[in-house]
Amino acid sequence: MDRTSGRLALGAASLGHKFLGECAVSRKRIALYVALCLIPLIAALWIAGLDPGYLLGDYVTSTSAYVTGDLIQVGAPTNGSITRITATVGDPVETGQALAYLIAPPQPGRLPVVPSVRSPVPGTIIRLPVLEGQNVTQGQTIATIADLQKLWVIAAIDETSFPNVRIGQSASVFIPAINQTFNGHVTQMLPDISAATSRSAAATGSSAAGASSTTNTVPVRVDFPYGNALIYPGMTAQVTIYVR
Image 1 (cartoon, rainbow, N blue to C red):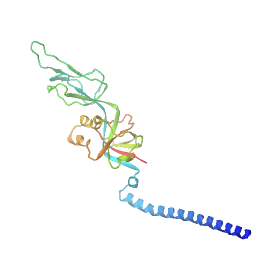
Image 2: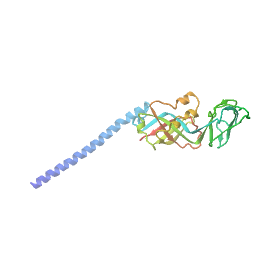
Image 3: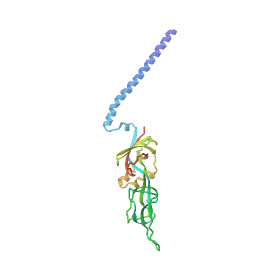
């Protein structure tokens, strides 16, 4: 009886191994068949202009993005009329450098005051919205200055895709104005309101200002090294964030 039981046990074990082996082979065959079926589907989607990677959730994109930075608004120290402008857009400036002069309204019994408008920081003038002879009020913006070596991109990410975005994820930044793409990474999920709205100070025109406000989106900051590329605040960008 013991020999018969042993043979039955060995036979059962052999059948079990054989069954498991056939199951493993079947799974491999099924996986192979599925892969062979997916290849034509992926090719068809690609030909139709649909990116399979996007459909599978490998990345999220934003075409509503723009370049910005720490933009410094230089205001008029007092009410007056601009008599002279000593710089222009694109000029590099140093701390304390005179940008313009204006003459203040005369006070009874006092000589006219000619104060100067000076740069509080080093950088480059990116906006100069005044003209010689123009009357200005105290605090009115005379010039906007930015450090062109420390710029970044604010990308508006659709709310449905935002939960997949994380700080540190890699990204690509395409700048249409210079037709170049740069590698970058996500550095901030919810930028300050001042950073998210600063484009209106760097760009002119309704289309530029309108691009900074998009409904049902969340702003994300993407830093990217751009070397000596001619990139300025207000330029539009297209951003792809790789979430997998």
